[in-house]
Length: 341
Image 1: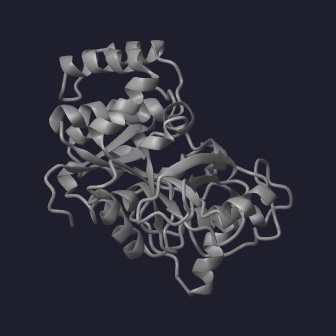
Image 2: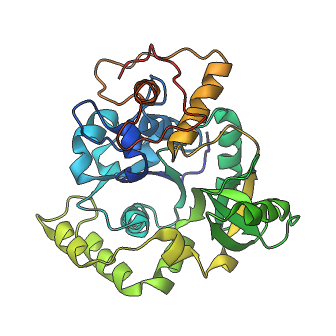
């Protein structure tokens, strides 16, 4: 664990989970965002991400940004996290706003903070390898903002790629550009150039990260900063945060903040660790097959947890001919049918 007193982690858990709704829908028809699901029993992805953050920073400096409407899902999963560390958004205004709100709140508590941004819907087979990379990125004194990427082991046209300025340029090469979901031929060329899969995992000096926001959306930063200065303990006056969100634009962090500011960014290649964002049924199937190949047995879900088990849902949907909202593929075959929902 890091001994740096200014190291923080921010778990990003406010997404709506639209891309995988066909798989995360419960028997009653309710959609559960992916971060509140489990791959094959055991902890939810949100809980696993909090545990991942604890390999880098102390628990008291781990924060989570969540959505107010998801409180029945996240409240029991974050019951041991200090309330001051849980930042609830009144509505979804895009990933940039979802980062800016907790960024300003953390900076109010620690102006010298270095923050690790961790999406809460990833699956990792080798947590130790990822943890080593996270510590390297957080401990860097030569790179203010580091994007962690994963070395591709195949061509994937559904992922984003980070392209380095120079393929061999030290531990933290400069970022040249981002390419989102390229065609197969372009993806092959990018991989030859040393491009990495973009996992949206970032280690950054908070002040430097805030400057990126200020260059792109200074009015939004000013409005949010004024509100947070009025109430630094995340106990906003009734309706004030909702009123602010009503007038904010939707902003995407990658498209509206990072793109065009690549010269301020560095990248770090994470050794092969079995990472997946589980963004499609095909990737869920691949992750489950990998577990099956290693003989990994399903884990029990604590009775106090109400989460969707993707293994069980996958097996159920694959047993149906043409399940609504779920696309069978050659890789999407039933596995772990004994798992429970």
